[in-house]
Each structure stands twice: as C-alpha cells, then as structure tokens.
Length: 457
Image (cartoon, rainbow, N blue to C red; front, side):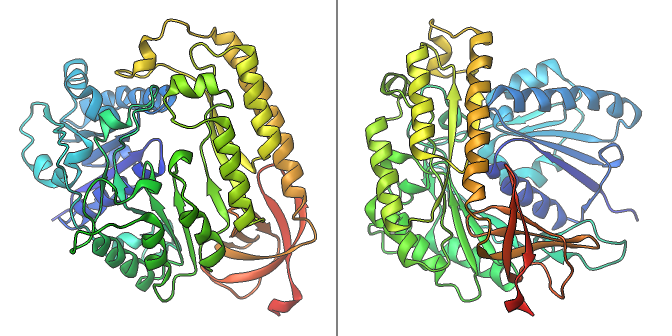
C-alpha cells in the first residue's frame, strides 16, 4: 500500500522554518513521507508569513497556481498554515474554495487530526487564546536529518537547528502583525527546552539557535519552572550552553529596550555563545521610533551597542530597518543613515514600509510616496553593502574557527562564530559539524574565502 506523501513550502521567518519542521514530524509520525515534487504530493502545506507584503503575495500566488494542480488531482489536500492563515482564514476559504484546510498558529499541533477530518468542504481552525500553552514537543530522530542524498542513502545529520523558546509578542509595535497572528507572549517550559536541546545534540546537532519574537523577555509573562519563581533568558542561555556536546549557541530576535546587562555579560562568560547579535533598530529617528511604539530612543540603542562591545569587542552586529514609515521625513531618514555609520552593522535586513492588515500604522494618513521609499532604500542598501565589504575585509589574514556545513567535490562551505559564510576551495578529511581553522584570504560583501590553516594538518 502506497504511503501518503506531503510537501511543505515555507515563507518568511525562522519561526516558520521551525514550525514547518514540527508539521513535517507530525505527518511523518502518522506514516506520511515527504515528496520533493509539490505536484505529486497528497498533502500540500503552505506555511505563510504576513510580516511583510512580499512574502504574503508569494504565498497567495503559489496558492493560485495550485488550483490547476487540484483540478488534475482532486484527491490532493491543500492546507494554508501560519500567520496569513491566522489573519485571513475565512477570506481565504471564501476566495479559494479549493483550499481544504486553513490552520492558525496556535492550532499547529492539531494538524493531522484536522487533515483527517477534511470532508470536501473548506475547514478553518484559527483559534487564538491568551492562555495558550506551547505543548511539550520533542523532535524525532528522522526529522533531524536533511534530505537530498542519493536514493537509499542514510541522510546526513543537520548540524544546525532552530529551537523555539517562546511565541507571540506583547510589544504592539504599530506596524507589526505578530501580536494579532501569533497571540500574546508565552514562554515554553524550561525543562521542555532543555530536553529538546539534549535530543538535538545527541542526534549530532552542533549548533542551536534559540528562537522567539523577543527572547529578551523570556519567562516574564508566565511561569516557566516547576517552582514558579523568577527566571530570565540569561539563565536559560547558561543552562542550554551547559549541555555536553553543544559546540555553538545563538539566539534571535531581541528588542533593544529589554537588553539587560546580565544578558550582555553572557557574551563574555559563555564560551559556546557566538559573538553575533541581531538587534533590530528599525529607524534612527526618535520621532519615527515613537510612532512605531518601539519604546526606546536612538540614544538608548547606541548606548546598548557600546555596552555590548565593551563585553565582547569582536561581536558581529546585524539589524532590521524599515524605510519610509508613515511620516518619515528626509531628516528622519538621514538619522537612520547616521545610525548605519555609527554602528557599522555587519549586515542588515532593510525593507520599504508596507501597510499590514489590522495594524495601527495602516491607518496613519501621512504615507511616504513609493518612489521616495524606493530611492531611500536604495541609498541605505548601497551604503550597507559598502560597509559589509569594509567590515569583512578586516577578517583577511586572520585565522578563524569555521564550522563545516557542506562538503562537495569542489571544496567546503562553513560558517564562522560571527555567522559569516566561508568558502574553501580545498578538500580535507572532514564532515559537517567539524570545526577547522581557516586563514581568510578574500572578503566579499556577503561571504569570505579562505584556505585550511596548517594547524589542521
């Protein structure tokens, strides 16, 4: 008897990547096998993101294309999951009656039961509760391997994995849909996180990235220990870092207003915590930051950066920037450019502002012209690219520990502690997860090249 197959297409953020892994495991535990071809799958899941308009548009475009596939294969089940599903559930079913299931962010773990209950009419499951508790969920061994090897071969262990520690957000930035699509902030139990991390390391995972919309506030809104006492993200970092066999630890994302000295101190005291930090600034203008409801000023942001660098001078900083927020003047934008010059980010994710449904800023009436937004974004990205190259050039001549992620006939690809990708045009006896010393001999805007240092021979 043929096993049912599934395909999951993931859009947007790292949280969605982890959610897709969870859905894949839930299906695999019920006998489903993964299909590499969407058109051949018995179940197709689009895991959507609504933080930015572009990701939502891509998902809706693919959903439209699946209509033709569904006509040829009426037995196929189409499921829409994630933030767009949570936000637009009933509307999706009204516009696209060939969609079988729409499942919200807090209904993720009900996926299999909901699929089995599909009876030919669209079903919507998008409940949202402020008392929601993230289930204890431990990854299975098969889900920790990565597909793509020769047919019949044993998949290689994935050396880097995401681990969700919390969901939702209480900050209510005026442009952001997260509180409406993922709910209020809820932290996972410490024991569940530690157990999942141990399973990952035992399965060969060498690097773990802890995920949350604002990891700095982990443990503040609900009890995360059996004792029910106070607990902080810095304490969680120390507990995860103590797991034997874990080589590297990262986390994302943080709100500057909640960045504590104790957390910053972790960068100098925890050996496995990588000197790389993503700290969204969004704008360099206090006027714009106030309209965004970010609850910090440019002065506080720069102070936090200075403190971080006092604990870890070699830390690599990245950020998020929104260009053209409603009311942003040329003077406001120039202050964002000044932040870029002052901090000299190693990289940034920059986007033009777009209205998101249900957010306060969607109703602001002082929108910036699209052409002006495009011109400002181009200026920002051009200067950021120059700074990326300048910052990366500082690594040339240095010997860096590089964790190997890919071994091919052409050479190796790995990653530094500062999260820089390194290409190595040499072949040595090594496997993904091994850490080798590499002399950097060339810097590009987005990656480095290097050669194996003689100390590895």
